[in-house]
Length: 110
Length: 382
Image (cartoon, rainbow over all chains, first blue to last red; front, side):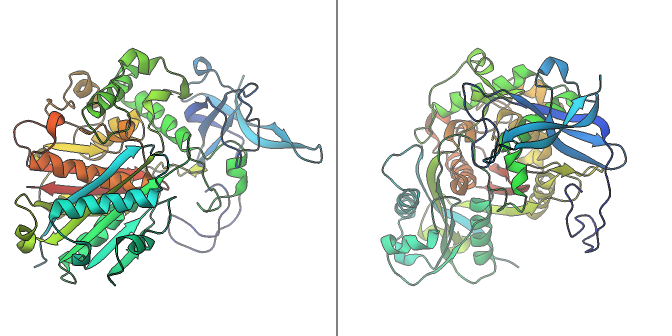
């Protein structure tokens, strides 16, 4: 499961351990977020004038799990189910202290 | 032997936007209309189950309807709130505890896509903050994968919406009553690829109340009792692909709709081939397409031919969402599942007016689906 949780949704067991997931996988499905999400909860740009559409998808990490994430690509012509994807860190917003806040995303493997 | 249950009264407050009337008051109006339909009084009601997602605790409406001392239980179960109220009312009569009672659902939501409370859904704040946690994204991703696997086309997605607004135009209770062409639908702004603005329903307002009675006493209230043959609610199992899921297991499970549908058919002792019409959750047009197969009415992929041939139109072989569905009615969460049952009662009574399904339908089916991976199914018959 992602993220870490205390119980197992498959067997109802209460002992889980933390493992590091792989950084590469294949795109299982995707969409494009075409309008600004509501804030809160969204921490990124919600101004309709400057908002830029972003991709969202599930990446299948072989032998592990399908993880939901933002995608760095937002062009429907360039996203294909089954394509190779790789984990990257992308800027999301700047907090009240002026520090950059980042999040995880997947990018097509060039 | 358990006791048979009939629906003997139905009431609805118009769906859409009603300025100046609270969600709760829309529920009260629905109750009064249901009582009038059954020729019953509020103090005849022995029990009530009621709920809303965003418009308050249902039991407080007794201060307006009358302080009769009845057993009133609030139900809050996400998108299956109305279905859960109906399930509870059904089994209360079936078990012999009470003879006559009411299931109530109402709601009133803010404009725009649902704002998800990630903490309330058991998820971290990071999930919504990072731009995930939109129900619209799930629907886009589920149908995108489905189109890839089963060859459903963009034209079929537009046709479903066009049918919804055409049916809604025949429904005085519906919110969106203006027919839209497939071109207008396909060319509206792309909200969550491959779904455009007019392929999505909107959060809205409305209320529905249904009066249930043990079948052997139904004649006291109506000469057209409609029998509830099954009411089922199911949650998700490991491996299913659901709304608001930061991850999905690699192994595949078909999801709560398939489970709820199978259980409902088993309870009713009939199969999908016996159903004359259905109201299926159409949060967006892809959902209606996928739910046709998940509920057992066709094979995966067969929808493409069925919809292109007009088989799910009111005059078609298997009419779906005859009142315009969520697309034309909007989705006041607490009321939405009961709206489907209200429509099926009208259709089975032969009282659906301009949108009446021809040839005296005998069996009708409802299905709701929603967060966090829950489905509710009912089967009604004359």
